[in-house]
Length: 301
Ligand SMILES: [Mg+2]
Image 1 (cartoon, rainbow, N blue to C red):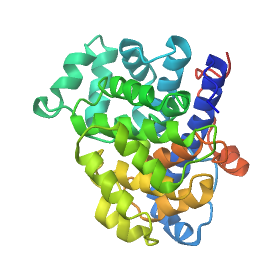
Image 2 (image 1 turned 90 degrees about the horizontal axis):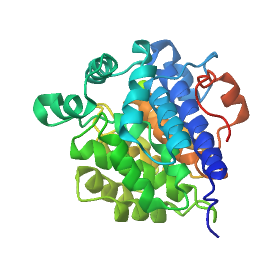
Image 3 (image 1 turned 180 degrees about the vertical axis):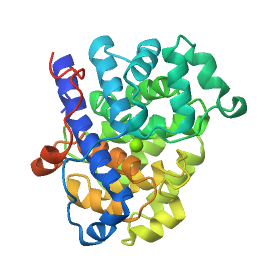
Image 4 (image 1 turned 90 degrees about the vertical axis):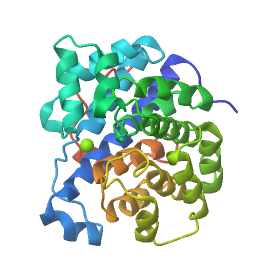
């Protein structure tokens, strides 16, 4: 069976993944509030509404550009990021400044290339927003990685950040297979085969070796869970967690959130990848408690 490659079919998949991403981001971000730490241990939900953060805001731009252009148009994507940039959504300082300058007429190519003394950002920001693109390309995982690569450069030009985005998009595309979710090993193997040599790729190989570990805290200690907010410190653990629980959003969420780190982002990645698959949507009650998506996100063709 092949996935529906029509635009309405693709958009529907991308929106489903986006909702999963938004729930992970919004609920995950509740656990930065120390008063909610005990709830996390007991797997109890905090008070609603849950506001989403930069992860969701940027993912909305990815979906909006795909709906309009049917691929990633870098200028349109950079423009959408800049136009919809809300300073209070928890962006990192470098991206806050970059998007302000783009909004004021700056060239994203120069600005993104100039970050961090010309190395480009290796933050997890290109990966955190990209799962819905993978869902869009569930019929073509290779194209998913290619378009994810192009999308990353608008803000994150360091190789690790770019490969991190490619890996998450590949995972979402594979999770969205019409034949149902792949086995954990098959998912990670599929992603590894689609990404170039990198620290992210090395981390994914290590994640593959640790799929039979049940102690997420140990795995997070080895792979990283976003404490340094780099792509290579974030993506391998998030995909380890997603691969082990494809089709079970709640388990995937709690496992990911409980290890701490950059929780809104690891949970946004996991939520977006899970919801790219047919059985991986978040519980309806969780969706209801999550802040609605912004009005400018296209909801149908
Ligand atoms: Mg965030």
